[in-house]
Image 1 (cartoon, rainbow, N blue to C red):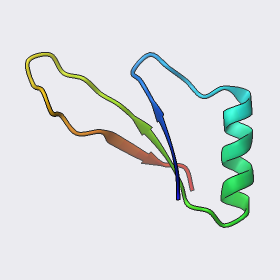
Image 2 (image 1 turned 90 degrees about the vertical axis):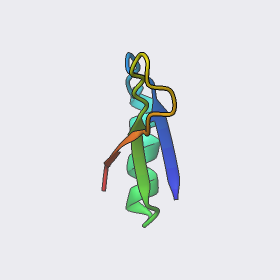
Image 3 (image 1 turned 30 degrees about the vertical axis):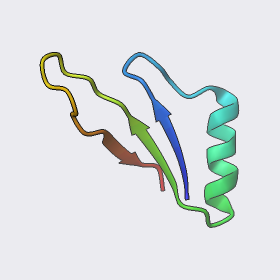
Image 4 (image 1 turned 45 degrees about the horizontal axis):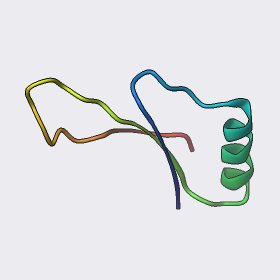
Length: 52
């Protein structure tokens, strides 16, 4: 399993996208997670998007 975590104002680079493609093509589960921070609510969970 491979996980890439991005902040609210971040995005995948072309190289990262290529590695995600290579890993998923090799049968490795890949998750792209976007960290979300809500003011006044510490401990909020991450929102996950599956790329496969």
